[in-house]
Length: 523
Image (cartoon, rainbow, N blue to C red; front, top):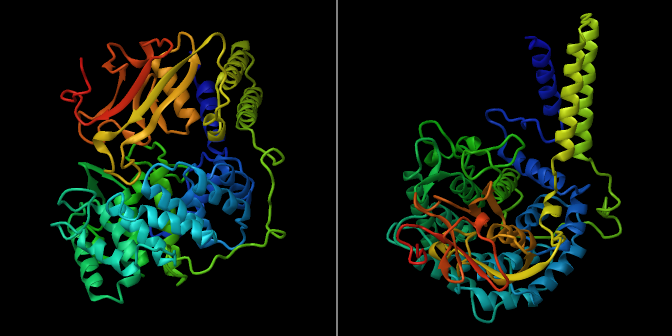
C-alpha cells in the first residue's frame, strides 16, 4: 500500500494551515517583557471581532453593546494609547448606566469606573457610588475606593472612611476573602490594588499591605501558581502582578514570589494558548476572564516600568479629536478575511503542489493522482459543511426557528457559589426567569443554547452535556459540583437533550456543589 504520498500531503497541509492567521504560536522567549502581552491580547480581540482598528473596535463594536463586559479592554486602551476617540462609546455607556437594570453592585461600579476613565459625567458616577458602596461585601468597597480615588463625588462616602473599612474587613489571616477566615489570593491582591495610593501616606496601610503580601507569598506553590478552591489557576498570579505594579514594584522578579526558581510570570506560561490567549486551566481552552486579566495586568506592568502612573488612576484622558480619529470604519464596509476562503486556498494549493511533486517524480499510476483528487474533494466538502461563526454572529437574537413555535421559561442560578469569585454574581442569578421562544419538539438543551445566545451568556458543553455556564464549570468547587436542571420544580428524569418541552414549561438550571446531597435534586 502506497502511504508515502499521503504522508507528504498531510505534512504539507499541516504546514500551510499553521501559516494561516491565528494559527502560529506567539513568539515568547525566556525573559520576555510581560508588558507586550497586552498588545498581543488587544490585537487578538480586534481580529476576533473583525474590527479593522482599535478605533473601529471601540466605536463600532463596544459602543453598540456597552454592557457586553468589555470594560477592561476599554480601560487598557485608555491607559496605554492616545490615538482613540471615545465620544460615541462614552455616550452609549452613559446612557446604559443610567437606564439599564445592571445586575450586581460591583458590575455597576466597574461600568462606572470605565465611564470615568473615558471622561464620563461625574453626576452619573456619583449616583452609582452612593447606591453601591458596601452593598455587595468587600468587592463593593474595593471598586468603590477605585472610583473615589479618581475623584468621584459622593454625598455618603469619604475616601478615608472607605480605606478604614477595607482595613477593618481583614480576616484572621491578615488578608481578605469574600467570606470566611482563610486568605483568598485574588480578593487580597485586589484590595491591595485599591489601597496602593495610600501605601506611602499611611503607616497602617503600609503595614497591612506588607503583611498580606508576605502571607500570599507564603502560600504560593512550588511551581509559582496559587490554589483556589483546591485547583491551580493563573488568576491569582495576574492579580498579584497587578497589585505589585500598582505599588511601583516589578512582580516578575520580586523575591517574595519566586518559588523553586519559578516566578509569577513563569507560572502563567503553561496557561497560555498558541494564539496568545489564556485558559483557566492547563487544557488550552480560551477563557475570556483569564485572558482579560492577563491583559490589564500586563498594561499595569508596562505603565510601572515606563513610570507612567498606576493602572487604576486616571490622571488625564488622552483622547484623539473626533475629526482626526483614525480608521473609523464601519463593520459593513471594512475589508474582511474569510477564513473559509483561506482554508479553500490552502487545501487546493497543497493538493496542486502534491500533484506537481507526483509529476516531477514521474509517477504514472492513476491511483496516485486519484488520491489527490479524493483528498481535495473530501477536504473541500468538510470545509463547506463546517459552520464557522464569529462571536458577534453566534451571540445574536437572529436565530431561525422553522415550523410551529412555543414559549417556555428558563432561569439560570448559581446560588450555591454566589459571590465566591468576582465574575460570579453576588445574588446567584445569572439569568432571571425569562420567556424563550423555541420550536415545537425542541428540548431543554435547545432552549438553553438559544437563551445563552440571546442573552450573551457563555456556555460550554460536550455534545449535549453542559460543563460550564458563565465560566462556572463542573468540579470548580469540588468533585461533586456541576450543573443540573429542574423542570417545573422537579428534577428531570432524563438528560436535557432528551427532555422535550411543551408550552409553559419552566426550566431552572442551577449549580450544585454536591449533586448527591443537593435538596434541589429530587431524584
